[in-house]
Amino acid sequence: MKTVAVYPGSFDPPTYGHLDIIGRGSHVFSKVIVAVAFNIRKQTMFTPEERVGMLRTLTGPMGNVEVDAFDGLLADYAVAKGANVVLRGLRAVSDFEFEFQMAHVNRKLAPKLDTVIMMTGEKHIYISSSIVKEVARLRGKIDDMVPELVRDRVVAKIREQE
Ligand code: ADP
Image (cartoon, rainbow, N blue to C red; front, top):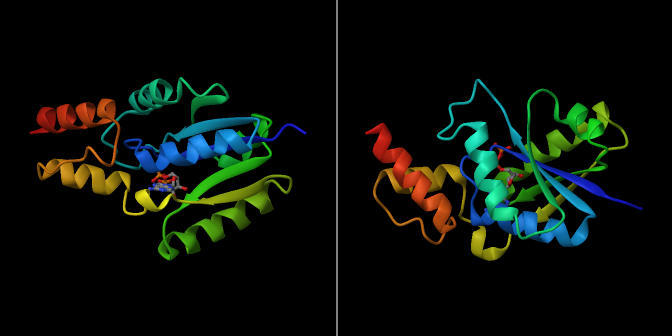
């Protein structure tokens, strides 16, 4: 059976934590669709197009990964894409409650859609997009958290904003 997973998130910006989940997901599922959430209410550093562009470059070498943007209900989007799995990553217990609730909501909305949660690689436990932005704003090194391409874009964005 073909198992298509949708991996939704803000990816503002994409980190090594995200790439770890995408890479591992690509070994488990027939296809992984990385779905960048378009949320006009959420203040983001990068536009959805910029986030999609970075993710496309970074996941290019993985053959079965597609990058897309979506707005509206994830359950509707996933069903429209023919996906049967929602892939999410879990860093700490603090992520759990939200993921647990979302998994139940999505199952209610689309009963055939199952959520699969992957534990983060221990090297990536502390990495989040907000930490990356915060450290970079304070002129700290983010080289261990994001690929070079992302680091350069984050640094350029911060210079633009100042
Ligand atoms: P959202 O705003 O939907 O939480 P994120 O871009 O922050 O979007 O995260 C997308 C997904 O990636 C979430 O499931 C999140 O738990 C997971 N994730 C984020 N950072 C890491 C990491 N360092 N290790 C593993 N999973 C992660």
